[in-house]
Image 1 (cartoon, rainbow, N blue to C red):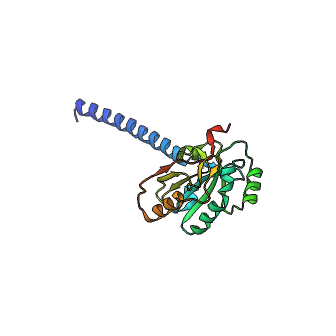
Image 2: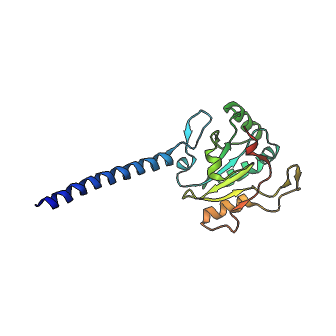
Image 3: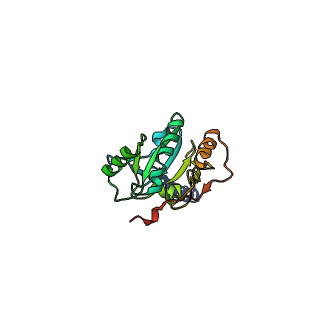
Length: 200
């Protein structure tokens, strides 16, 4: 083997070593970003709602304890969670830093919620879901892709102005579409309620 070949092999080895290091660093950064805790349960434990759903459709409902619109929707939200319990994982998400675990437990008891709640003080799930209002729903299919975010139905025309009964049911339609693999004609719909941006 002549000197030219030796030099070529040496530089090739250096290049491969550098390339392998860069790939390793890139993979570690990607892994870290995808495994970062999404939110916390009421015991303060980091929870990834998609991992615990185990392939189910995931519905995140953003609420706050002091929002009258959120509270009025409690029976409808609970009913939907019961209807789809076999195939859909429902989570209440509280984005306020000021709402303690005890406040949330009390809120759940008062309004009859029977499915799990998460605190999202860092707004990780808020950003992932593009949520702006409470109450607002985000529907993710079994592949963790956001397929809908927005209002639950059109009960409210504006804050403080409600219909006698809703005439459209966006969340129900989004759940059905996610379960059947269909694509919604409208993947988002403005919600009416309390702005998340108004929180601290």
